[in-house]
Length: 248
Length: 281
Image (cartoon, rainbow over all chains, first blue to last red; front, top):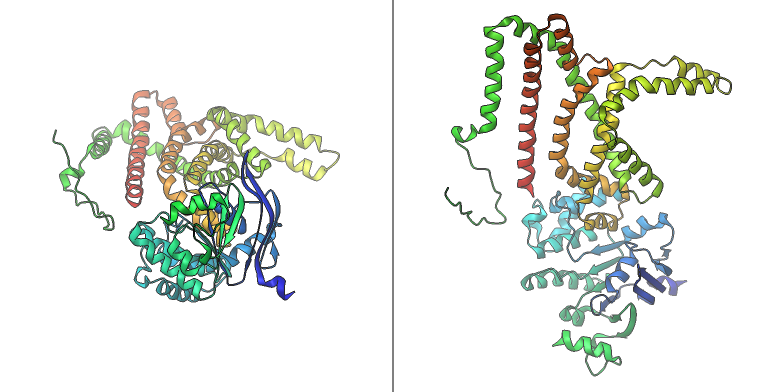
């Protein structure tokens, strides 16, 4: 029993098609509690789809996903799982009609039924944690991309999730803003948060990743550690090709 | 014509509308509005008979027109919200019902719909009542006894018709909000209806305020059609006055001026809302 519980995410033989396009083909992956797993791979390889399947933003065609002991099959489970799993999107997806603070308190009060004062104090703590306590009353349109993404991270953390999913969190940011977001993510990793990250930020990969999954055309074709992340250490030709491009 | 160059604005600073001088505020709308007001006043002052008499006679009708329009509009917004959500539902049955409703209603003129509800639906209800005479006598008696109140018929007719158009406005408004908003809300553990209520609809409503306002103006004008189903609205009162005095020109001039005053005023409010929503985006 103990052993089972330590695998916080279990993905077994998952396949997913969009029309005729195969997005995931018999993918299996387990993530341990407290582990930081980075998924890399060329675009269209199914990285984001896999991530979105973990909190059921996409449904799978076949296979099984178990998150923290809850199988993602019945509709009843889905909202429960989603509250445990924080998700950060490439385009932030902040709610533009709400202030930064309200973005963070909304789900707490609606889903967790937290009192407004409690939700607000947690939100202020989280804004301080991501380094922008002074932006509590700013609307998303008044924030820079990096600030917006940090609010988005705070919003996900407010639900006190056990797992955080990051879908290319820095791809839409200007280079000078990438670091401020990565720093927040690194802090989270150090605190022992379980994280699954789709990203090509090699700085983050080297500093925080425990495992690196390489995906290509819907398959997991190679798994390695940051130390093994060099051209010579990779077994697969396709991995070497891809790494050659992003490491240079 | 001088070429206007737009100053580059700081993205974060709020753009406040510049204080316009009194002269700039007197645009075409104001001239028209003031013109209509002056004409109305001039007519009623210089020739109280018949113009003032007509106006006094129309007063009850004006109240009915405003009442029917406002009450219908409340129901129309409700139907539009439900219909709009139905049109984007993933459930094929709900989506089908909503789509069939919209398609049928949009294909039938409002006048015909009102006639149908007032004159034809009592026959349908009575027929239904008679067919239930044996199996459910209590219900049967109740159905046969139903008399259609003209006000109810008018409000039901306007609601059914405008509700269909309003559904399309709501659908378009909801669909204009990026999918990521719903996904972000759902990923925080909020349910579909919670996400709609707290995240998608507040944004969608801001987007659709101008077309919804235009619908209100159109409804106010189309409410004149309820005069055919025995509702004593502004138009019907005008017809009654004309029938008893034979002053067609004077009567319809006054009726037209009263409608025009209301619609000019309302369309200005819609324009103001439009301006505001442009600023916030």
